[in-house]
Amino acid sequence: MKPTGARLALLAGAVTALLSSCATQRPALEADTRAIKAEDLAARISARSSRIRKITGQGSVSFESRQLAGSAYFDLTLKKPDSLLISFEGPFGIGAGFFFLSAQNFVMYNSLENRVTTGAPSAKTIRSVIPFELSVEQIMDAFTGAFPLPEAGPASYTVDEGRFLLVYGVGDRTHSYWVDPGSLVVVRYEVRDGSGDLLLEANASRIVERDSLCAPARISVVFPEDGRQLSINYTSLDLNPPETSFVYAVPPNARKSVR
Image (spheres, rainbow, N blue to C red):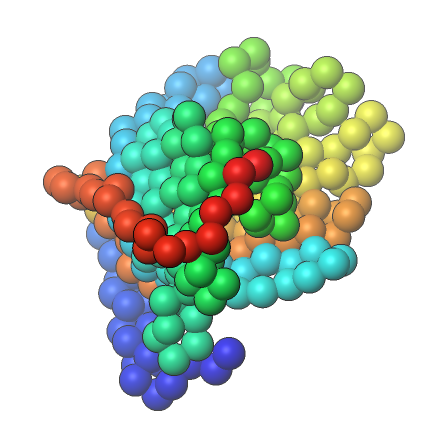
């Protein structure tokens, strides 16, 4: 799908606004392990992330697997820890449906097929409507660009190319977090197995600051083992907006299925 000239102009303007917001960020914390202890850095990262309770935004999402691929524009409303409503838009501004997720259930409405699917929000049932086996927490983390740190202390704490690097051992896996010293956002995250093979790689970029709150406007998650990829690109992003709405409507004549 190719955006129209008008859409391109709107996207360019939104991206410019997002990029200009980064210039107002507070001075960067010095990327030096002697300047701050690992546990203090981890506490600051967690505190920064926990301050973001709600998000509204617009953008595009794309996914790819060995079986299928697709992309769409979206409007999003999110409230931590477990409420998410995404309205999708297809070519030429045609509404494609919505996806609602909470701790108790999910609702997926496909307007092109006039079909609504409901179910309990397990990774297995969610994969029946989207091509990724993700938990509620993982979906929320993907759309907020948050990669929570383990509670235990890191196995190593260094600086890599101007970023703090925290490495944790979790079972037989190694979790590595690269942290931007200016925003305290995890901008790269890797999970490797005991043999060193890469299981997951995530990247976050185009950091947006709103009233001292920081979040990435571009997030990508890759699972190298099976070729799955998820990319989220916000063209507008509002952190802790005063009002949010999770109201949705399903046509009474929609075909129904339960997972």
